[in-house]
Length: 319
Image (cartoon, rainbow, N blue to C red; front, side, top):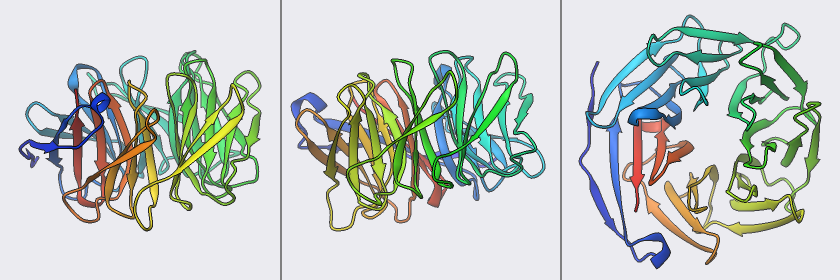
């Protein structure tokens, strides 16, 4: 397997003191055609990615740059990958219409197929809630859950039809998803499975991804409007900020351990950092055109970035 990684770059920034003065950047070149749709940092330093076009789970060792591809079987086309409470990677695999778990040691593949009543839902994103239940979305208009202990899989039709995309769990036990096609945020009743729509102030904003901060507030990336928005369930209040640039297209969103918000902007081919305290944005231009960053995820001191358009994984490290 071909692998190599690029040298560190130190970026001097005129940043707010709370954010630090510099960030290191490191890129890892993946095998051609890997198409890393989503990325997830796991235990022991390992980084996993969903190789959508090759039907594989990718494993990256950041210490050496070594890449391993684990084939997921005929017809596989994984979209999202997360690391579960068990330390294993879990994937939403639209090609086989199933939630997939891969044992990180034995490489054994375990599928949780959706019921026959929902034969193809275009599986998108997954998250574990505080009770250890996995929740997922499908762009064809569904959301659902998997209980890893009982193996029960349940699916519900999303409000207003197709479009269910990003999903997030909050520290206080909540689960929320957003609809790209119908531009809303929804809260799931985890006991009954019912979803309640929460309408944002901007019409047709194109809610794409969602992430929770430490206060259980929801941060939403708005593809159509070019905005970053926040919904506070405690006050039921929204707040919006337009990203910098002439035509921002905000795709991914991630909130780090300091409650600093990171988004990817396809319009400017940048990663953008937002400080909610100062309400200031700071842009980090990507060094290759067409990076097409569809997802961000991280761990303490790191933001991991899937550059799907150029077969690379990028990490930004900060103090």
